[in-house]
Amino acid sequence: MEVIKAKDLVKTYSDNGIDVHAVQHIDLSINEGEFTAIVGPSGCGKTTLLNILGGIDEPSSGSVVIGGTEITELKDNELIDFRLNNIGYVFQAYNLIPVLTAFENTEFIMLMQKWPKEKREKRANELLEKVGLSDKVHKRPGKLSGGQQQRVAVARALASKPKFVLADEPTANLDSSATKQLLDIMYQLNQEEKITFVFATHDQRVMDRAKRIIKLDDGKIIEDIKVD
Image: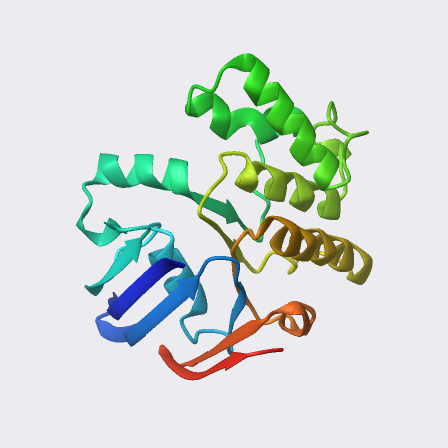
């Protein structure tokens, strides 16, 4: 089943009066359960594309349809609600709330969605167990390693049961051991629970685990490979 369908996406912005063509006429479909890496050199447009697919950035033209909803047609407040309820995000910089514990960071989106307390607690504890942090639930980000913080970010991204998770360079700040642990967890979630992951990355370790690799250059898809 198709979870994302992008058609003729274009993103052009001005840099000191010079037009930069970050994304150029991209057509792309992502199916449920894919483990996909969008790759390419720095400046090729992969983060811009990921942000457009996730409704964080707006294309200059073209459309993005997620689960039957054309997000490029939504008003700002509608888009905020749609992102909250349908898309999980994992960023390079973790983006955890420093004053909240691992548990509180994980349940935060459910709190915004007004989940009942009992359901929030159950879901947060289950997710932290899945990412191997059941012994760190009361730790704040400052007391966690980078790899542990990123695992909390994964748990938070999954909390609202999104249609898919977008991960922008999630391993960039991690050492080899933490990267392996994180990718093992994400791959296991993909295989066992059919959670769809879409990465923007230049990390070979992520590419080695991906089942589909989409190569960008100068804002265009130059190769789209499915890996057995």
